Length: 265
Figure 1 (spheres, rainbow, N blue to C red):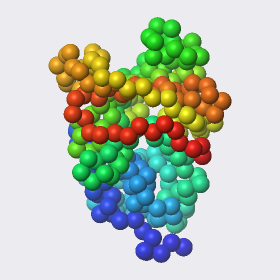
Figure 2: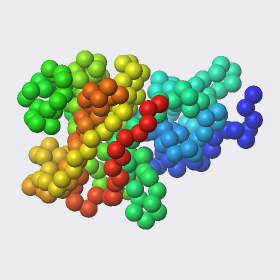
Figure 3: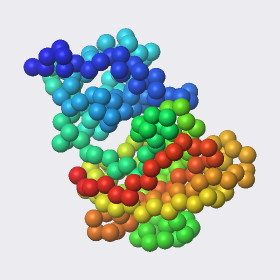
């Protein structure tokens, strides 16, 4: 049985909750809750084996109802981040059962040097022919792709605009889901859990250039706007191109680190 000292701090969760929504108007609260927990798990604040506060305690500490807490925790169970034990409660999952993320990009606080986990909000998703999607997709061996447009940001920073391309047969089911259910989703985890595909190598290209019309529109920038465009081509262990991401960052965006690759899990 878990001791009381293993119970996770409600105060820490409240702080993480407050940090998840610099512009969270209209964002479902259950997603904010799951993102707050995810942040604490990924930065090591909530260690494997730690017991979550009770659902009623969480609801009392945050401006959310019990049903919202239950929905947020169910999302964490689906993601493999927490496990539930009947009569004992919910616990942070053992690290062996968590699918590590491949951090293609990271954001750094220029004052403290700390790395910040990004948050994402999907603004559009569509199915497109690969051949009509431009030179960015050269080498992508798929006739059709799913394009996902997202806002990407960390606390206290202006957002960047991100575009992700996945093979249609790997992401077809996403088209039928409401956009709000796609906020914060881990596509690397999805590829691993459903197709046993993981990123083994990332090829980066970065340049100063005019941001796209879509980026200016969603970032509320007057066009033309000169910023940085950063492309990431992700390959599996067989060197097959599996996922492509493009990030468009306005002038003055916070420092970042390029990560060439990360060992497999």
